[in-house]
Image (cartoon, rainbow, N blue to C red):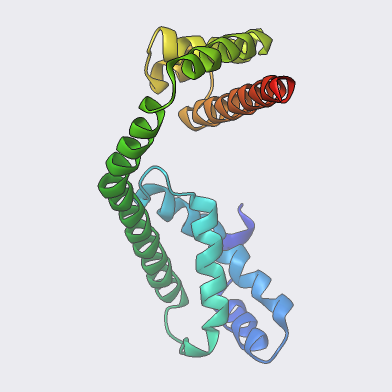
Length: 198
């Protein structure tokens, strides 16, 4: 039988009372009692892109901080889940704002960057491309597969995840790391060439 089911309401109330009185370790009983049900509920209500574990932890922290607001003898579970709902709504709103910001401003930033790059001398672009090809050749076969799939074959992240046996998030991270490594490599090679010219 699960440990959290063994915790009776009276034990829960005692733990809350003790926590309020300064015995902070008593809050562990509260967490043990509600950790699994809360994570389960969050898993069913949380959209992709939000970390359920992080949200559960934030809910417990918020409940701990506001424990004096809880009225002893009422339904603590309902009170905690209300806090979790609020945490979920707050995080969803935050992510929506971030997405909205990127939707509004990303095209403008991209346009500026394209204009900046198009104003570079053609020979500089050719040099950069040569350095990039040399840098790609230095990547391990494993990492080079991701670059090839994404930029030569132009396959989707979902397909890359299926081919590699990784999650989409892991594929995104791998691509980000590879791009960062390639950018650093190109910049280093350009700096060496510019140093030789000077």
